[in-house]
Structures are given as structure tokens and as C-alpha cells.
Length: 80
Image (cartoon, rainbow, N blue to C red):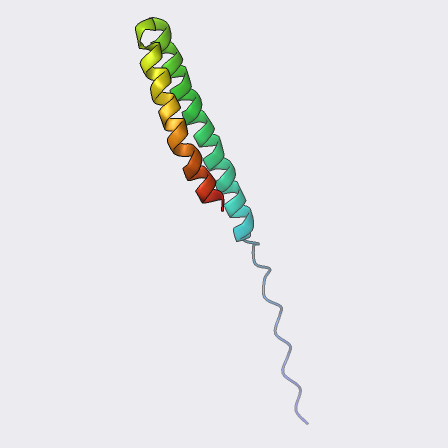
């Protein structure tokens, strides 16, 4: 009788790849953080402009109100 073939050694362990869910949640956190930073920058810029040029307060407030009225239904539609 012949000797049985020696068993192959087990393959080396593969490094675990992060799951796509954790990648997506990390991307979401980064995107929300960047959005908040941009909004804070824009708000700070508007506050500075209004402080330096008080006559622009009414037109800027009107523009912000119009943008809010336009974005509110769009956000409601996108949440569906």
C-alpha cells in the first residue's frame, strides 16, 4: 500500500475587509460633517456681511426665506 498524500497546510488567514455597511455609514458621517461645516461657513459669512453692511439685512433675509420655501417641499419629496 502507498502512503496517503500529506494534507495541505491551511491557507493563511485573510485580513478582514470592512463591510460595505460600515463604509457607507462612515461616508454618511463624513458627508453630514462636511455639510454642517459648509452651512456654518455660509451662515458666518452672511452674519459678517449683515454686520458690516446693515442695509443688506433685508435683501439677504428675503433671499434666505425664498430659498427655505423652495427647499422645504424638495426635502419633503426626497424623504418619501
